[in-house]
Image (cartoon, rainbow, N blue to C red; front, top):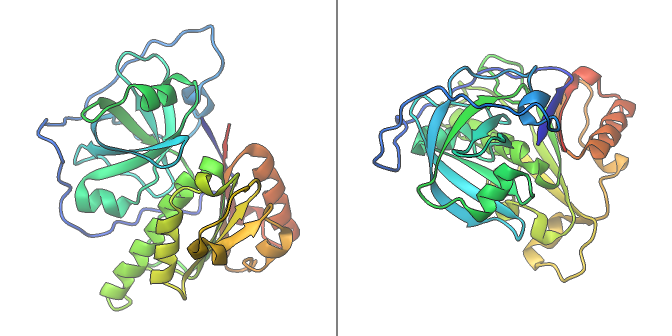
Length: 309
């Protein structure tokens, strides 16, 4: 369950060109409204925690067209969506499941560019007993139909005319999801700028600091490394492992660090005049990293974060 806590909104709409989104299934998807009766005797849920956040007005149907085990505890869903569905890198969806009262809140882990190219988006959901996550892990199958509504103030979506910035992305655990979306979006921006001979948005450098319990829980690690290799002068990453007990593959070793993210390692990627930092992870981690960044001279209005409970 996510609670966006944005110190400032420093992102705007940016649209990548591409072919019209094509659905990967035969059912005609139409925008429709969804009404859910909510019980008054329960703990605060995703909809209540995010009530003050921006939301699109439309609720769109979607169909599950792919399921893989991203790790022992995380499933990744690919969903074919309505052609009018859109989102910004870093945002989340309200996830409505037929027959369930509880509404899920999951960040996209794919880029807006994938949506425009293939008409699909992806979610990576960690197993919990919360009904929406439990449904994804125990009941969801290919062809399952759900409804989704996009929301969130936590995103990166610059205009071509916006000033260049350096991004520092700091993720803890499954908090990687929105930051992975942003990382993939920066790669799309770099490709777009190259294809237009420099006429589109000029992004600076992007560095990802990603902390997890062990190698198995480092989601998307191979793709992250590959995209950093594609743009070695622009994209970089460091992985931090806190409880690794087995041998590590050789190709991962150059990127691995034992223990937690340190102030010295953050300082190497902080320029108070250029750095824009996005944080997502458990509340204690967000609070600690935010204070460290402030101590390193980064203004609060250049720190954006989303806490995962």
